[in-house]
Length: 81
Image 1 (tube, rainbow, N blue to C red):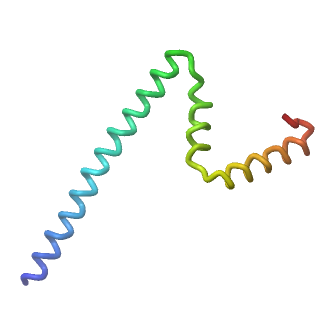
Image 2: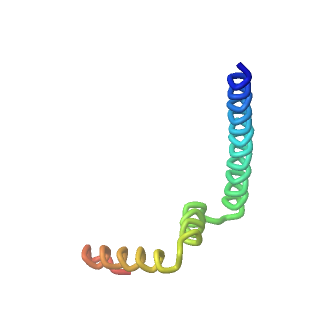
């Protein structure tokens, strides 16, 4: 019987921790959205900013490979940059 009570409390603990983290994640997402809004208000293009952030997260080799593929595709379509 003691094990069953322990398992329930352990499960409850995990669930409550996840719920708190989900709340924190939502708050962070709201903060990020607010920063993008501020940037847009000062004239920055938020779509481009999102691309820059995505690229900065990538490893250099992966980014170079993606850029090479994009150049290849654009060239194939007669749209080389």
